[in-house]
Length: 168
Image (tube, rainbow, N blue to C red; front, side, top):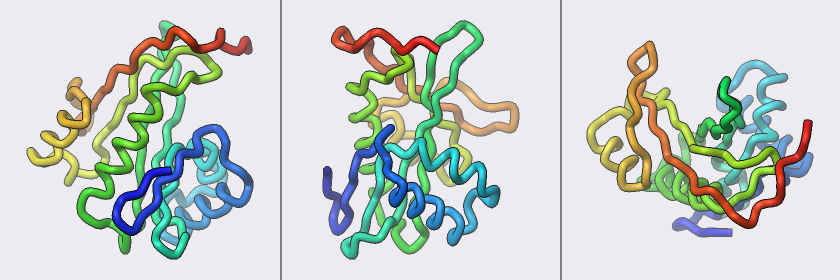
């Protein structure tokens, strides 16, 4: 558990309980995010960091989807949502750092995950100041999507002490 001002950052990756998933889905629904109920449910299982305000209400979260490349390498696809009323300066950076710090040392049950990938879906995240922030956190701009969005990558270290991956 970490703190950022009046916010609490709780790491829950692969351990969310039903009540937390319901909170996540409710947040997305009431904020007009992810209109498809099945997608809200699927992505609620991908929560990494839950952000709670001083009253304990869910203010936002980070998620990662696990992606397998054609060559079998694994990647995390990072997303974050903070409720508009809670978009205070530097909270997004704190959540991103908390997520990255956790994933650098996490042994995923499916095996080694090579990198964390971020697509800057919000054009505000493609401004020069945010690009500097992404570099300071440890990301490298690895190009652009076909629609011109920034694509960022953070390589994750191999972990010697992780158990063998689970077989399908």
